[in-house]
Length: 314
Image (cartoon, rainbow, N blue to C red; front, side, top):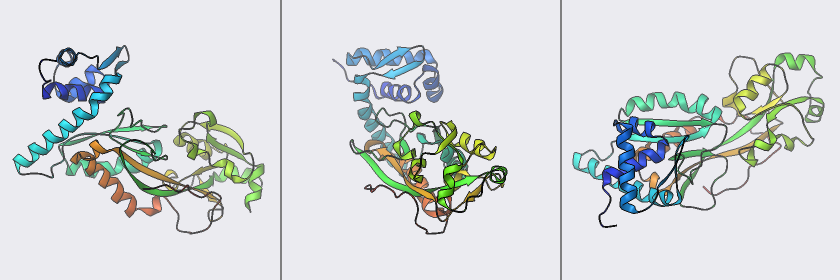
């Protein structure tokens, strides 16, 4: 390599790595998609390496692209810090943050929270990855993620976002049509709505088996929003955190102080991305909100439950 790559070419590389398509990168950079393609071709020629695998679905980082990614992000962080310092505004938050969150948490809790936050930061944008699986931070699918499994390897910032409990719920119509539930042992004769067992995004989602019997799963879904609709339609009982259940009477708690499972959400970000002011701003927003709203995650009963959380280091 006779010449060092230009920083502007690395900006194009970062945008394409984050969006996965020429059209997405061109929108973010406000240029023509042909300009993005030309810059990537020039960068690959300068480095003597193929950085992306091209397909009809889009652009995916090669092994060399993944190796370059953290270095480009460090340069981005340094450039933004220098710009802020020279402008006299070292705490300004700008750019795009890709945030990967569980489906219902993203829809019911985080999306409304972002409305006021983005109004306070007009130069910040959020790409919210709301999906029934957890974002792959190792492949830089997201800058910041909320997950049930804290990573044991790699260079990550990790903190416990919230401990939450999944309580038992049923539709009034279902409860009226089936034998009464007066104690945990009565549950064995009832139908349940649950996750598709061979599509679990984490083993931490396997909580029905802790009831002490093999549950009769009448409908299984890959997402909890669909489970809540199925349970409200009377297809069976379900377990869910408080924030999942709307206050409309379609689902009511059952043995709330007696039967529940306990889990923890972890917030994770690669160390180099955590240093970016925009990523830290979103990190602090989620942490402070979760600390201030414990009733979203746990009902105030303090009773012992059927499953205890695994011990993890924050």
